[in-house]
Image (tube, rainbow, N blue to C red; front, side):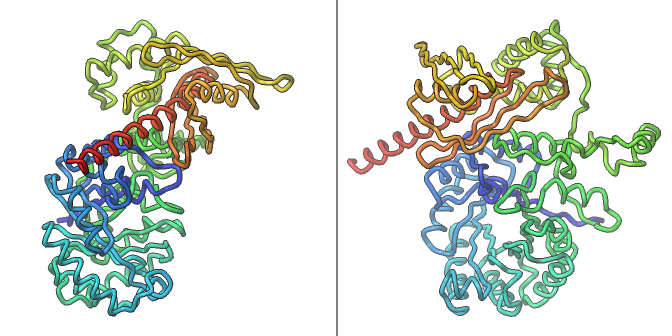
Length: 518
């Protein structure tokens, strides 16, 4: 009988700290709902003390996503812990996750505290957290570079004061499996009250070993694994959820452990995250990369055609990858489109189906072959996350290497139409300058990415942009067979997000002012 490993997903907290991967409240809710379908056990929804936006996101996820445990991060101080509890107290199952560093290098140079001071801080704050919340997780930052006897003392004290989950992070990704596994085993053996807690691993990928270290941690006593979709996270990222889950599933004889992850939701989770953040996975990424199940060598193709398992250790269907086959035509109706979306795992409301059908018919007029990937892009691109303050009505741009580029843009806001033109260094730059003139937002483009959804000269193209508005970064995305159209709508998507966030901040300030007056 295999033992269960609990999956703690920190895509919305540690993962969002990856450069360019910040999300607004609506996007975080969308990811959280998908993580619920994926059936993760715990969602670390954010760091409530960090900002009002983080607090609101954690609070909203706690209220709307009911199946998983919702965790909130807090440093080991009363203010952080109370703020975390305020955000998650509405959750069906809540967890406070509190942490402090324990390595001598962190104590000396970052915290400027002694070992005894940190130990006392852990004792006091874990008690506060447990008084508020039944489930408390304690993490020792930089655990793998900490003195093992001191670390055991800290963990023992945390358990004594009510911590029910103990996390052993490889914070800087410095360990290798031959170190991490034995370290975990010896550490747990030194903790006298170890039977009162579940031990967890949280590994970073600086040496490309986060998944290997996580598996070593599981083999040596950890029954919770902390990870992110696509392995996103600070620096080189975190342990990849999909790789850990499928390693446990495919190597049952050597790793007698299981998770409750619905693996058929893995690919959709990966695509959704990329779609919202613009952080694409490389083509040869394990499990979810574009080439993960592609076979070009003749001998491989021959083997797969005869018996798939000759060169595939898992099926594409087991992780929810759809086949790239011609599925629909310009004469297909709403009913057929609805059925196809159901096959792809999307249950659309009447309004969402109408919007998807509108974009589908436009696409069908522009390209001959429509693939499953096109349909997935249509439904993800068409689902509204925030209100469209401005909409693109018309865009026309000229360019070339012999003349100055020019663009004419027509935008609509609340029924009113605005038209502007601009010159620029290329048609995209000219288009964005025209948008700036209409909206008055003046964005600074940080990153611009084009991704071909399928093959062929008429392939649907996805454009992702990261734009700085007044020191804050926003992601914009759009898809079209016309790159200038997609570029304009992606940029406008970022503009609309920035305007929406500004309006929300003004509302919060107004509410705060009203509360003070009362």
